[in-house]
Image (tube, rainbow, N blue to C red):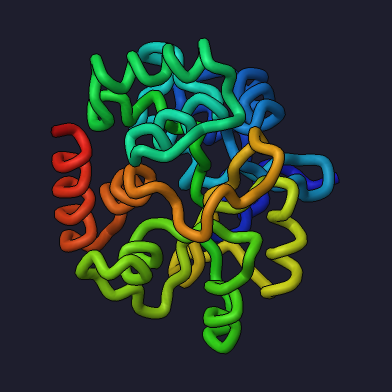
Length: 232
């Protein structure tokens, strides 16, 4: 049996320290893993929780007010970008639209955590070009900003949303490994639409929010500028 005392892979922590960091019980951490609110891998008899997933949950303080489900979060992001959200019925679209109008995108960012938690990975550089053009991905962050000519260079990093059910297949195909020096950031999305991705590039609103989480100050500045433009 594998013990919690063994050193986990880089970027992952056992349940006990994850629970301590979050200020919850280990049972609650297991619930969050099961619901998809925390990303984790099972190794033998234990679960290893992705550190970035823990830190993101803390930063976005999901306990303060109910967060939006993936379907409603993405509907709001699309509506902020003046795009349709056909997976919601008329009544739900009206409610989401009213929320966006009354609060604005920036104020609602902590409720949009379920748009997709990022997993930081590394692939061989020779595979990045093919990965960037894989039709199962919806580009976001600096990658999408470069594609859309928003004034950023993507560099040798691919950032995209992916439907959670395709994550293992993509990881195997492109030999992706968890890394503290990633050149791939995949945001796993729990399925909500009949087809995925909903577009080659994420809505501008989602790109802007993801840029705000970038380590590059120029990316964060662009993200803030885009959100300000959207909220006008």
